[in-house]
Length: 545
Image (cartoon, rainbow, N blue to C red; front, top):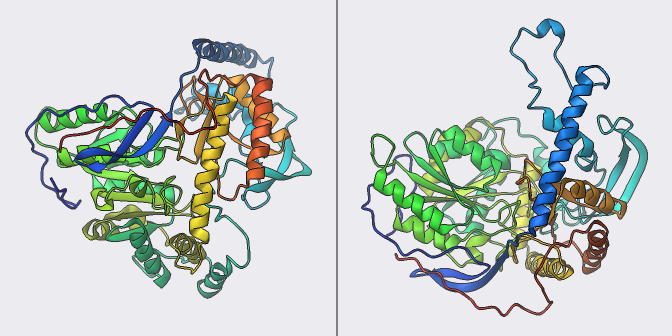
């Protein structure tokens, strides 16, 4: 059944409940593609290997020991034997509602502060494939830092989202950006609704619509706000949001602000999603059992902590079957995947019109700032007058707008060169090479083979800290992530591969990773990989239309 346009007022989702053919659990190797339901089209492989049981036991034990020492240090602070550096309320304000909850700050005081030197490091150069860091030290166990005046030059940058290398400072490439800054200035100082609507804003929106294959598009000055401020304009009370459990915070915040009912399905699990869709259609709203005004499925193209790719063809088949609507966040996938960089719709060769709301950001592949919403013209026109981000936010800075136009034209080949397609292919080669080598070394990594987001599992809290410090000593900048941003037993390092990385840079990183992996005993994988292509069987998934 063809899906209607997403409008302010949509038909109620009153459908009869039909049994559907379930497509099985997600396995490592699958073929996805459009057709009758989901016909197999393209080989995709994702890896989510589980660590040995002793690793989980040691991880919990490590957190337990740190927690016990934290309570002991809190006792020492309470009796005055240790100084407390955190902000505290004065005695005369104790009768007021407390601003600082002791237990809520426990994690910050006793766990995060011990390892704070691994985050928020000051950068003093362009965040390209290499960058410079300002060295800092702490004299009070990371409560405060002081700069030493020394700079760590040419550290390899494996943490920035500079997928296509457009975060660059070459004068020839940035000439048009400099020209627009001279013509329009840096700031617009008004909203698009008032006197901040520039011709280059409209040019960018038309370019974005052409690039993603949508009827219309609208741009915003902040990527996070593109989700959090537009979702409340699309859905509200009486609507149902079905959200992937690993969705980004901006999607979660937007869903909560909307006032809609939120239900969470298991990550990339089509059985879980279909069960919720069937229940929503059959049972309707709680107590009244009236049909939901809208049912909106929210997913991401590439999940930024897992490196996994959405199972888009299957989700489209389900949303058509149950007359739901689809919101696709392509923050990490637009520009980074697909033969010409058009994201997961191109990767799976699906019709962009099957995605009701196409969202993406310019902060990753385009080396700029802001985000966009694309879709039917009725949807975009509605958001222009109802979105808080459109009505109240200042218009996008002109040089930032031109940077996006420059990068997008380069990707599309409208600049008269093949530089854009060269970068897309280079990113794909770098991604495959880096992932394959890590697997050969024995590391556990998550995600899809096409994903430039590469999580390397570290698990234990002590090893997370040691890993980041050892890599920096080898002049490699990495991002490490732990609880509460990840499950307590799945702390990790997250690498972001770029087209700007040369093979020599990647080999240098891999060489040091191999050394650090042996030093810290991080090679937990029990699977054997080789550099030869995987010839495992392919499995087809089909859904009834």
